[in-house]
Image 1 (cartoon, rainbow, N blue to C red):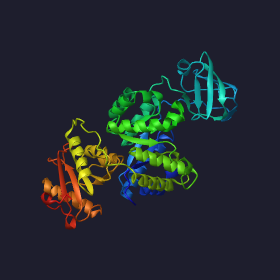
Image 2: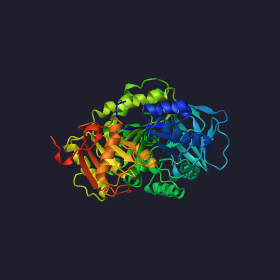
Image 3: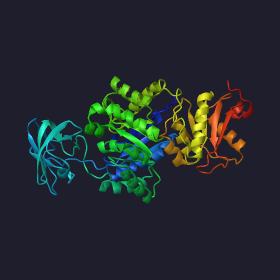
Image 4: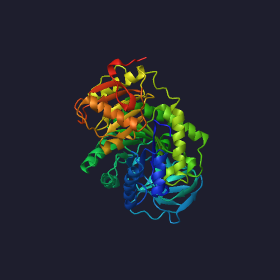
Length: 489
């Protein structure tokens, strides 16, 4: 399989619960596997996490595990008959009282008690991802009286959004506190925080996660109008951001979504954060074995915009063709990467570099753009140097060699980075360089005559100690030739 620079996130579910199906999507190219804590029992979610670790080891792939919090999503309650059909002009109430009656054609309960305090007459409420639209007419005690503008069938437990945002619901819900502890127990590599509205939400989630004993990195899902208003501070408080186009599109309107997607990607890259693009990327493949041309263009445009990863949800969780959708995503990403503008402009010119490993990474990328090299090798403990390297877009693969499984799994999300298990056996730098090159040559990544850049620390094995850069050439049998005599032409 051709090396792909953009990473693929696949959501787990009934379609991937068998070990055979899970192994198949990992072999097809899934780099990160997502457990959506909104679906499935505690036992099912824990079982999926355990299978990911076991199957990934069996097939010999470095795969990260991401848990996705439910967040404070507002939903309507249950209908007596499971659903109702609403017509334009109908009056329908939403009951936010403590003990609402079961739903019927006249109204239904809602999970957010503060909704009557947050809405005003004339505002629009969007239900079931915007398929049902209601206009607020008046508030009577804890009931919101609405007029149906766009009708249709409305089922139990469907989501609700306020057009334009403005709900005061907190970013971390009560059930999220429990789920954070469960995610820590599952030993996830990433935790996605749903519906954060401010940097404080991310700080609170990080503190809870650390108290639970987990060092997982945090992903901020951008899906509220308030998150757009506080975008830069939320990015700064996170390790990665996710463009969650479902609820975000409902709140801001679909016409604004394409431009905002590009804005979020640019903002994340400007702060050297990992960025993920998600939601309905290959939705038709839930049923069909091939994607639509519109879906192909959607994925390709996200890749060309610079996203680190593209995410699949129902396509792999409940779809009929989980392996085929990964294969299709792989093909589209590889095709789009051939058209990425990677070397015309070196990012962040004149920026002040505050960390030594960041400075070494920027120097390595500058060299890679001006001297023809086949690969960059990062000898890294924590993976931070590999992350800095991946922030500058080039066509040069970055092989991140680390002895730590948790670091290798985390790096599976970084664009352009290929994590490799490597245990350093030498304290001498020359021997360490030779050993690293030999490891990659044995795996078929390097051959005689290839020129590579190597970053490492002069105190080998020390976390955060990257301070050295070398340009070497691979000799016969995978040895490193004298780097003082390289022809740079």
